[in-house]
Length: 143
Image (spheres, helix red, strand yellow):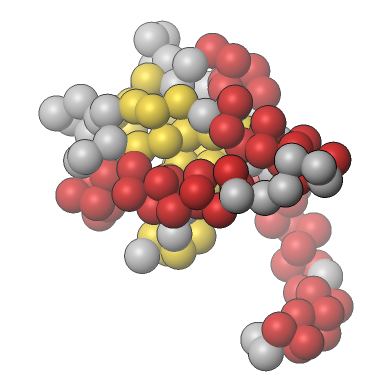
Protein backbone atom coordinates (compact mmCIF):
# COMPACT_ATOMS: atom_id res chain seq x y z
CA UNK A 1 0.00 0.00 0.00
CA UNK A 2 1.35 3.41 -1.00
CA UNK A 3 0.27 6.48 0.95
CA UNK A 4 1.84 9.85 1.69
CA UNK A 5 3.42 12.72 -0.15
CA UNK A 6 7.16 13.02 -0.82
CA UNK A 7 9.13 15.87 -2.40
CA UNK A 8 12.20 15.15 -4.52
CA UNK A 9 14.29 16.62 -7.31
CA UNK A 10 15.21 15.20 -10.69
CA UNK A 11 18.95 14.99 -11.24
CA UNK A 12 20.78 15.92 -14.46
CA UNK A 13 20.42 12.33 -15.75
CA UNK A 14 16.63 12.35 -15.37
CA UNK A 15 16.67 10.18 -12.24
CA UNK A 16 14.31 10.43 -9.32
CA UNK A 17 14.55 8.68 -6.02
CA UNK A 18 11.79 6.33 -4.95
CA UNK A 19 10.45 6.81 -1.42
CA UNK A 20 12.67 4.69 0.87
CA UNK A 21 9.59 3.32 2.64
CA UNK A 22 8.50 1.61 -0.61
CA UNK A 23 11.78 0.39 -2.09
CA UNK A 24 11.21 -3.24 -1.15
CA UNK A 25 7.85 -3.20 -2.98
CA UNK A 26 9.47 -1.62 -6.04
CA UNK A 27 12.72 -3.63 -6.12
CA UNK A 28 11.49 -6.10 -8.76
CA UNK A 29 10.78 -3.26 -11.15
CA UNK A 30 8.20 -0.62 -11.86
CA UNK A 31 6.16 0.52 -14.80
CA UNK A 32 5.76 4.26 -15.28
CA UNK A 33 3.15 5.52 -17.69
CA UNK A 34 1.27 8.65 -18.68
CA UNK A 35 -1.37 9.31 -16.06
CA UNK A 36 -4.34 11.62 -15.84
CA UNK A 37 -4.22 15.37 -15.11
CA UNK A 38 -0.68 15.44 -16.59
CA UNK A 39 1.01 13.37 -13.93
CA UNK A 40 2.75 10.01 -14.23
CA UNK A 41 1.47 6.76 -12.75
CA UNK A 42 4.07 4.40 -11.29
CA UNK A 43 3.04 0.83 -10.51
CA UNK A 44 4.98 -2.10 -9.08
CA UNK A 45 5.53 -4.52 -11.95
CA UNK A 46 3.10 -7.12 -10.55
CA UNK A 47 0.32 -4.55 -10.05
CA UNK A 48 0.92 -3.25 -13.58
CA UNK A 49 0.32 -6.71 -15.00
CA UNK A 50 -3.17 -6.69 -13.45
CA UNK A 51 -3.90 -3.16 -14.72
CA UNK A 52 -2.58 -3.92 -18.22
CA UNK A 53 -4.67 -7.09 -18.42
CA UNK A 54 -7.84 -5.15 -17.58
CA UNK A 55 -7.03 -2.42 -20.10
CA UNK A 56 -6.19 -4.90 -22.86
CA UNK A 57 -9.47 -6.76 -22.29
CA UNK A 58 -11.55 -3.64 -23.02
CA UNK A 59 -13.38 -3.77 -26.36
CA UNK A 60 -11.36 -2.38 -29.24
CA UNK A 61 -14.64 -1.40 -30.86
CA UNK A 62 -15.10 1.32 -28.21
CA UNK A 63 -13.19 4.53 -29.04
CA UNK A 64 -12.74 5.58 -25.40
CA UNK A 65 -11.31 2.14 -24.57
CA UNK A 66 -8.89 2.35 -27.51
CA UNK A 67 -7.83 5.87 -26.55
CA UNK A 68 -7.30 4.97 -22.89
CA UNK A 69 -5.36 1.86 -23.85
CA UNK A 70 -3.11 3.88 -26.12
CA UNK A 71 -2.37 6.43 -23.42
CA UNK A 72 -1.71 3.88 -20.69
CA UNK A 73 -0.07 1.02 -22.60
CA UNK A 74 1.83 2.75 -25.40
CA UNK A 75 2.98 5.44 -22.96
CA UNK A 76 4.36 2.91 -20.47
CA UNK A 77 7.98 2.13 -19.72
CA UNK A 78 9.32 -0.70 -17.55
CA UNK A 79 12.13 0.53 -15.28
CA UNK A 80 14.34 -1.25 -12.76
CA UNK A 81 15.43 0.87 -9.78
CA UNK A 82 19.17 1.04 -9.15
CA UNK A 83 20.74 0.05 -5.80
CA UNK A 84 20.08 3.56 -4.44
CA UNK A 85 16.36 3.28 -5.27
CA UNK A 86 16.55 5.69 -8.21
CA UNK A 87 14.74 5.31 -11.51
CA UNK A 88 15.49 7.07 -14.78
CA UNK A 89 12.39 8.66 -16.25
CA UNK A 90 12.47 8.71 -20.05
CA UNK A 91 12.40 12.17 -21.61
CA UNK A 92 8.98 11.64 -23.22
CA UNK A 93 7.44 10.95 -19.78
CA UNK A 94 9.21 13.94 -18.21
CA UNK A 95 7.93 16.12 -21.04
CA UNK A 96 4.37 14.79 -20.69
CA UNK A 97 4.24 15.67 -16.97
CA UNK A 98 6.32 18.88 -17.30
CA UNK A 99 8.91 17.50 -14.88
CA UNK A 100 11.86 19.84 -14.71
CA UNK A 101 13.42 19.92 -11.24
CA UNK A 102 11.07 19.67 -8.24
CA UNK A 103 8.59 16.82 -8.13
CA UNK A 104 6.09 15.29 -5.74
CA UNK A 105 5.55 11.54 -5.40
CA UNK A 106 2.04 10.95 -4.04
CA UNK A 107 1.12 7.49 -2.78
CA UNK A 108 -2.36 6.40 -3.88
CA UNK A 109 -2.72 2.86 -2.51
CA UNK A 110 -1.79 0.74 -5.55
CA UNK A 111 0.27 3.35 -7.40
CA UNK A 112 2.49 6.35 -6.92
CA UNK A 113 1.73 9.48 -8.91
CA UNK A 114 4.64 11.67 -9.97
CA UNK A 115 3.79 15.35 -10.35
CA UNK A 116 5.51 18.58 -11.23
CA UNK A 117 5.61 20.19 -7.77
CA UNK A 118 3.85 23.44 -8.71
CA UNK A 119 1.13 21.55 -10.64
CA UNK A 120 0.59 19.29 -7.62
CA UNK A 121 0.25 22.24 -5.25
CA UNK A 122 -2.37 23.87 -7.50
CA UNK A 123 -4.26 20.62 -7.96
CA UNK A 124 -4.13 19.79 -4.25
CA UNK A 125 -5.35 23.27 -3.26
CA UNK A 126 -8.30 22.93 -5.63
CA UNK A 127 -9.37 19.50 -4.41
CA UNK A 128 -8.96 20.52 -0.77
CA UNK A 129 -11.15 23.58 -1.40
CA UNK A 130 -13.80 21.35 -3.01
CA UNK A 131 -13.47 18.34 -0.71
CA UNK A 132 -17.08 18.48 0.54
CA UNK A 133 -18.47 18.50 -3.00
CA UNK A 134 -16.16 15.65 -3.97
CA UNK A 135 -17.25 13.60 -0.94
CA UNK A 136 -20.91 14.19 -1.80
CA UNK A 137 -20.38 12.88 -5.34
CA UNK A 138 -18.58 9.78 -4.04
CA UNK A 139 -21.39 8.81 -1.70
CA UNK A 140 -22.86 6.61 -4.44
CA UNK A 141 -19.66 4.50 -4.31
CA UNK A 142 -20.10 3.90 -0.60
CA UNK A 143 -17.23 6.15 0.43
